[in-house]
Length: 508
Ligand code: FRU
Image 1: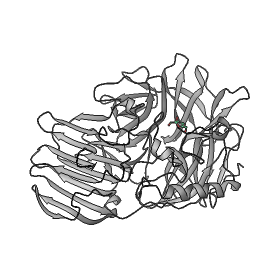
Image 2: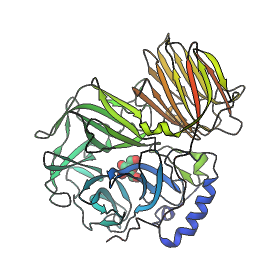
Image 3: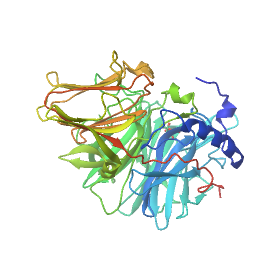
Image 4: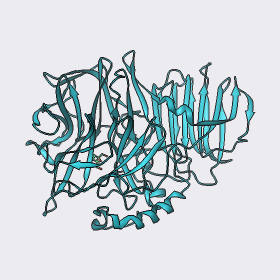
């Protein structure tokens, strides 16, 4: 890891830094690992999605952003916009620390649309002179020109009984005429909890209600980050990122997990009653802090965006280039037969370009790839006979590259980064496995340093970062009677350098 001083990591971006950031962007733009259809940090480090909303006819997403290097530092918000959740445009700096209350970072938060404004509730990470941290919940709003105004005082003060430094990530929602905020916290016994506040208005009058009780659970690890709640049809989806869950054989293996329950929410008693056990939203190596957005007229579905990374992970290859972090592809969430289904958003179909490989019932009818792996492609597989399947992406003649395999007899589906040259975060293991009774379909999205696998039409998703070297450029495939198609893709996400044009925050 490169060495940065605390002072360097506490830098707040300013117009006079534009030249420096431009140079940094010029450099990272050339990286082999920059993506063509994933939201990627403009410079420096990106983490959680924030303020994800449908506003003024477009999808707006912000991300936690440290502009100057590929490490966690002073948190800003960067703003991107899309018409279809696939083609994203860089809008510029969304929010930066300008107040005493957020003097040590504008931490994560959520969005809520009302009248002509997108309200953004976020955590003001405040550092005292003695170095101690206190977290306040703050509010800002952007207008239709993306001009941001912050309210200068907190809407929620630290709650007694919980650690001042561990109360954050407000998720605002509206139900039965009342606004609610759900947020993560750690109590004095070092347990992870979720807190609920309510108000009859967005910007004032917030009062503490209680902890959110989740039936069957007392607490979640030592801290809950980024809770989010979303009504889908007549069910509620509760998702959150607890820290310190106990590892199981096939679950909670990442440094921290992003989990969910489907169930019912009783706002009288502040009780969430899950229909089933706690599950991970993603079974791959890199996924955290996801949040939902929705369109009011489509209440039977929602959209999910997640950080394609995790706290305490490092991605040495791009860190040394001056950047780190992606967002995952947008997923459409539905609840079908009581189960959460996560499908790539429909508009992703539009990025498919040329069909370069085609096999029908195991017989190759087209092969323009000649075992050469594409840096970015879309792969679809049908396995009507439920046979064994093997795919080795970015392999060499001797090494397996990124391994994807299904063993129909053992009923295990496995991904492995073990054989890749560039290793990372190996303390958390090099393979992920799930029990899978039948492998019917796979939709795989490969984008330079990202592999997202949707299994059986959105029943399970596995997301992984990889950093293949130039020498790792082969693809191998096996599977009796399978249908397999591979397409090249049309780039969908801009890599433009925009910081100050819009969204420049004067802290008013
Ligand atoms: C989760 C998180 C949040 C916090 C933000 C700071 O990754 O730690 O809890 O608000 O990141 O960047």
